[in-house]
Amino acid sequence: MTEVPILELIGVRAAYGRIEVLRGVDLTIPRGAVMALLGANGAGKTTLLRVISSLMEPTDGCVHLGGLHISGSTTPEELTRSGLCMVPEGRGIFPNLTVEENLWLASYSGTPVDKILTEAYARFPRLRERRRQLAGSMSGGEQQMLSLARALASDPALLLLDELSMGLAPLVVEGLYDTVAEIAEQGVSILVVEQFASSALRVADYAAVMQGGRVVATGEPPEIKHRLSELYFGGAA
Image (tube, rainbow, N blue to C red):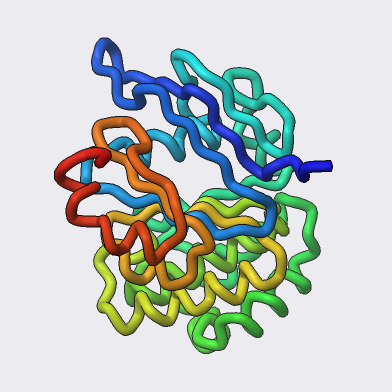
C-alpha cells in the first residue's frame, strides 16, 4: 500500500484581486522528506506557503495535509494542532520580549514550558546565553534560531521554512541548514522555500523550481542544481 504523502497540492491557483499569482501548482512531499522549493523573487513561493498554511484561500485546486483536504476550510490554529508549522520570512518573533518569554509563548500548543526550554537550549546553546536578552536586539542568525526553536515547540509533522537565509552571512546560513538536516533526521517533514539554492539543495531529498506561478521542474537535488540557471530564467525545458 502506498503511503499517503504529508503534503499534496493539486492544481492550486491563487490571486491578489485580479492578479493571478499561482497558476495551477502541483506538488507532492513524501512523509519524512525535505523538499527544497526554489525560484527567483516573484515566482509565487511565499504565496504558496500562505495558501498551504491557510493564511490565504486558493481560488481553485486542493491542498491535502496527511491525506486530509484542508484548503479553504481549516484555520491556521487548527492546522497547527494538526501538525503544520511555519517559520515565516522575517522570522516572526516578538522583538520586545526576551528570548525566554518568546519561548514561553510557544507553550500555547500544550507543550510544557520546561520541556520547550530544555529542548530549545539543548539544540541552540546560544539561546541559553541570550535567554534574558530582548529578542529584537540579537543578531539575525540568533533570531532565526529562536524562530526555529519556537516552531519545534509545537512538535510539527510538517515544517514550512520561508527564506531561512534572508539577510544572513553564508557561514550562519550553513549552520542553520545543518540544524534543518538534524530536524529532518528526527522524522519531521520539511518544505524549504529559498531564492538562494545551494544550502537548501545540500540538505534536500527532493527539489522543485517555481517560475511564473507554476512548478516548472521537480527532481533530485543534483539534477535540479545542474539546471538552475535554465529553470530560473528560461522556464521548463
